Length: 295
Image 1: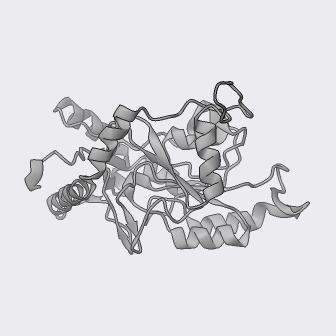
Image 2: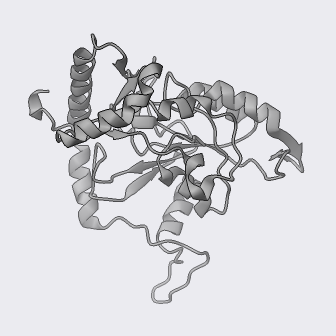
């Protein structure tokens, strides 16, 4: 999974009793670097008892988790190829990318299973919660079972066959989400228009650029990322301080996962690109309503 991600991605791995193994970022997508991941898997993987294991730690390698950073899709073709080579399922963290297209297909529909977020800051919101996407009926049934306390159907008895969760979205929140989904195309259109304004505004600014959607993508531009040139990375915190003091709510990219205390001992590949981007990315205000309906 990427080290450049929100902590929820790594937390979800930990909730399963698994260990995150951190991978580097592709500077052209801000997502997992498929080529570097493939090379890393070739270096660490060995076949034991019919499945792949990390030959250094002995742990089984169970899945690849990709996160579509700021709404921009990762190199899914490259990641799918790497996953097929090692018989690994691809899990999409599409929390930020609802409405994003990758080569004409919606993000969250290319992996075996995906997660969406409907948190209050997402492009579509129910106030909280999210959704699971899969075209595997067995996985869908299992997910619904686990998220409803793993209760077995019975007219009156309370029978549960696994440790489950109470992750059901209340009906009133779901109704809000349905109404929001009807406006998704409008939200994406306005987000993309705002990104166009930022790109025009920074087009002639030396030393900084607005991150553009990757080739073959139609991004929802959930967050607009200003990328400082390498020589200006040391000015990031000063820019954050000045803009926030002026009432412009900028923020840095998340602290990389391998820098957080609970994940510092997790295995990793070389993470040089992610570490370089961490010091150079500033997220700009990106609400679909920032300029009203005429953005």
